Image (cartoon, rainbow, N blue to C red):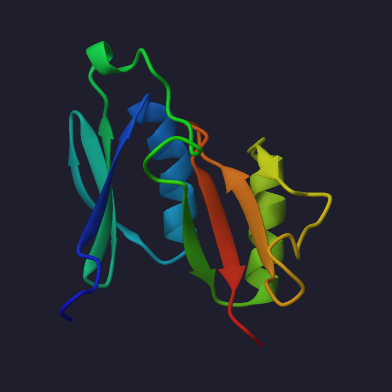
Length: 132
């Protein structure tokens, strides 16, 4: 277990929007709700959990951008290409900002079956099928 990620903590501009977006997605991927308090919520899968915390108002003046120093994106395994396809349609129906749809589902290369999209703070997210 040494070296595995214990948890990831992300500060967000709207905890309410983040919980709606990430709660559904993470639970589709097998995560379960873990902790919740007035300024945060987390979901857990195995020994790893992801935490979202409401950013204090005084720090909201500069919005997140994945091309600045810091986190660029999060990539998750999908169980199958079918799951990528299913979640792609679910994301579209929810009005999620989809990325690289002109190259979908091979925007990452010919052997990289994935969907790319953004969360409410425009953090890029990938859902990648395991090789079949």
